[in-house]
Image 1 (tube, rainbow, N blue to C red):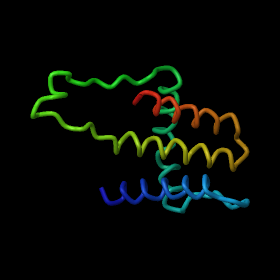
Image 2 (image 1 turned 60 degrees about the horizontal axis):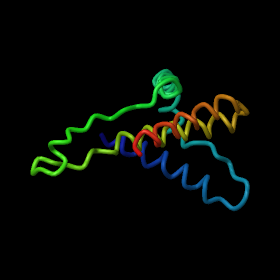
Image 3 (image 1 turned 180 degrees about the vertical axis):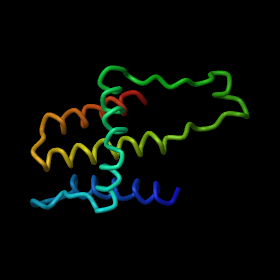
Length: 116
């Protein structure tokens, strides 16, 4: 769990740095994040492809929304996937793979839209 938390934090930090920059900078991910993206390339490709063809639908038990058993849905997994898809998009854009970068960006956008 610590490794996932560290990667989530690293991906988020990379995205914030990219969005808040005021001058050109090297957008290369940290070595640990780059290694994780490479190790999970197949998983990220599958997520990208799935999000390209289907909009996720999240089941919710309406009976539990206002009862004592109600809980806020956990969004950490969604946020982590969102950050990883955007990190991969930035990585691909940096390497000049604009079509692939756009596909990852659109997958992230589609994931975000599924929560609205």
